[in-house]
Structure formats: structure tokens, C-alpha cells
Image 1 (cartoon, one colour):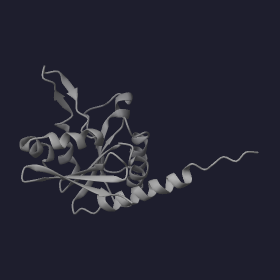
Image 2 (tube, rainbow, N blue to C red):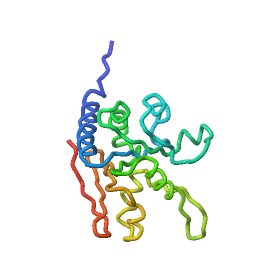
Image 3 (spheres, helix red, strand yellow):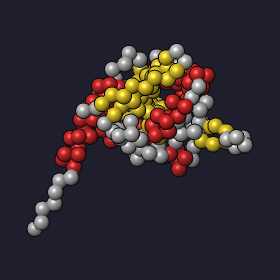
Image 4 (cartoon, one colour):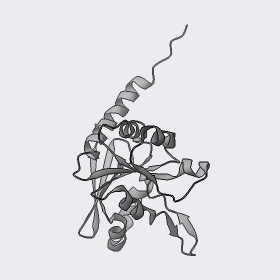
Length: 188
């Protein structure tokens, strides 16, 4: 009988270490922590939302067809040490499941704020979905914005936090004097 190597033992502890480090930084702010999660990137997101029942809202309005609801973006208020929050960090960190935001506002205010950015228009006026809740999009978009765009995008948000190009980095974007500042934290 041939024994198979255990691929998950070292990788799992490394992923858990990154998740623990990210958790400490994400919950280190004085404001509420929210996650904008992408149903298209996060497998089982709707099931987990239903099972764990965190405070959440879909960014899309109305009764959605099941296939659309499955890939829709969701805004979730995260609580420290909640099972849902642990699942998001342990399974989603490094897998571009979404971005995080610090805000003193409540879920309803943030949902209204974020809904304004779901659709943008190309130069010909054609509507396009703007996947700002994907860290690969937002971390590249924010540095390109002018002061007015940044003021609109931040609104009630104190900071946007997300994974960097590698899972070992956490990026924190804040608005300071009309310009975005990015601070990179190394996760261990």
C-alpha cells in the first residue's frame, strides 16, 4: 500500500496563520467591520449566510433568480470571533472573495452607498457592472481616482482593507486630504 503525502497540513496552518494575522488587523479599527463579498468568487456564500445569519444584505434589489442570487455581491457586518467571520477569513483570504470596510455607519447606510457603484457607463453610455468589491479591481482602481471620485467612493467609509497581490499582504486604503493613502501590512 502506497502512502499519500498530506498536502494540507503545512498549507492549512499557513492559511490559518494568515487568517489570524488578517483578523487581528481587520478587527483592530475603532469602527464597525463590514465585508463586501462576491458570490461569484465565494463558493457556498449564500448557504453560509443562511446558516450563520450574520447581519447582511444583497447589494442587488428585489427578488433575484437563484442563479443571479448565487453570484451577487453581499454586504455583511462582521463580528469578531463569529463562525461566519472565521469562515470568510480562513477560506476566503487570498482567494479574492471580497473587500472589507471600516465605517461608523450601519448596514442600511452602507448598502445605499455601495449600490451607487454597481453600474458604471462606458464612453458610449453603455451600462457595465463595476466589480469594485473584488480586491483585484479596487486595489488598482483607487490609486487612479481624483479627489472628487475618492470622496464619493469613500463617503461613510473610513478605510478599505483587502488582500494584496499575495495573500501575505493586507492593504489599507484611507482618504487623507483628498488623496488616497495605501499602507501595506505583512501578515505572518
